[in-house]
Image (cartoon, rainbow, N blue to C red; front, side):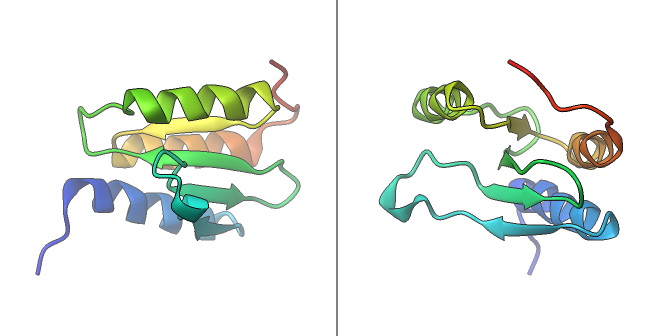
Length: 102
């Protein structure tokens, strides 16, 4: 059984997080469909959320609205649509020296 393109992106994210000594949890949003797919925690880095999409796909309007609300509360939210992007976000977050300020 093959996995879909979105699952490939999400699996790449999970592998990259583990390679950098972090952990990630699948978010179910407690009944709120627009919640980002993953909460990511990396050593010595603030937590962040990741919405995984199939290549070329975008967050829905409902997802974008929630992502904006989370950002207004100081959360970091990424939307990734490729294996390279997922790995790059984790590498960037794992090796950065300063916190992101909005």
